Length: 228
Image: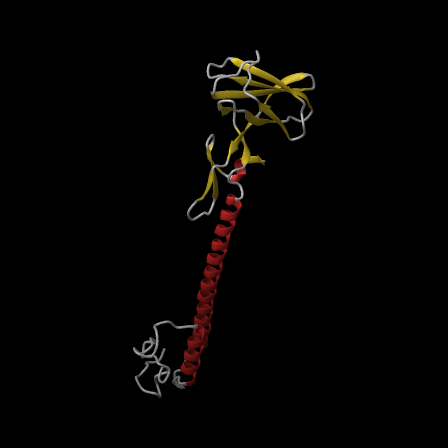
């Protein structure tokens, strides 16, 4: 590059509000260099170059490409920031619509409230002809056994809190297990428990939606098998 002097003839920045280093002169604007300024600077620099020592045109092209790349990255960052804000707003709206509703989650433990019920489901094995759901107390003793007719996907059940002898079972935690008959043989089946969505929260940064339930704690939408 040729030596730049501080005069109109050899200073490509003269009259543009820039000093010899390319920075704006104090009092004539901010310190930012936008694309229009860059192109004006580039054109003036080419017009005022030393004819005996012409500047390498490939350097101009390289500088312009770098400037365009930085400008593109800044625009992309702005677009991503807007998209993140939109995603957060969407997650909040989705979560708010679930508050107060019940979701079906994988699990085998549920709490029976006084005069309450326990609602759940069984992942129905393919080809199942019958399903048995067993309710056991904390000591592992069988409290109630229910026979269900299988339905595709998920077979729902509801326990009214009555023991096998017709008496009211005490409030407290219970364990649920299930077995399905497939091709004449019994096999264990996965159980699901209905839980109330008490509130929702958004993970900072990731904007991941968390459903806060009294039984299973904080769960994600991926954990939900059914909403009702």
